[in-house]
Amino acid sequence: MVSFNQLYVTLLLGTFFFGFLQAEAPAQSTTETSTESSLSAANFSFWRDYIRATDTELGWQKLPWQMSFHKGLKEAAQSNKPVLLWAMNGHPLGCT
Image (cartoon, rainbow, N blue to C red; front, side, top):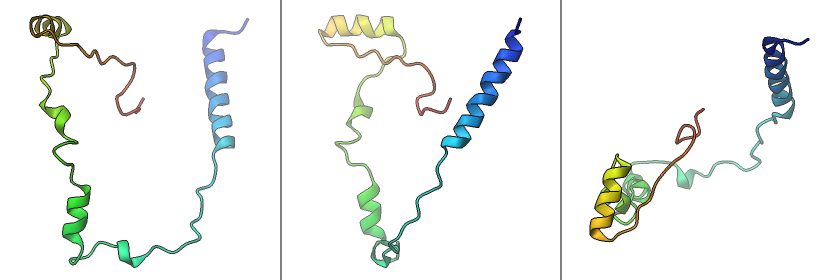
């Protein structure tokens, strides 16, 4: 009979093996990088303003977030507003 540890190690090694087989080489770019998009003192302010988030994009930060679901439900009921429950499994950035 196969033990749990043997099965676990077999599955783990199989996963690594097939992962390496499926890994692809990074694509080679056939075009050269344009010097027009390079960062310089002349275009620094353009790129800074282009990358910086606008007030519209940061509007979610002004929402009154609650860490307690119960407290949020009570406040929503008092103000007759909906509740957004953010629930997930794992790391928010996918780093598991």
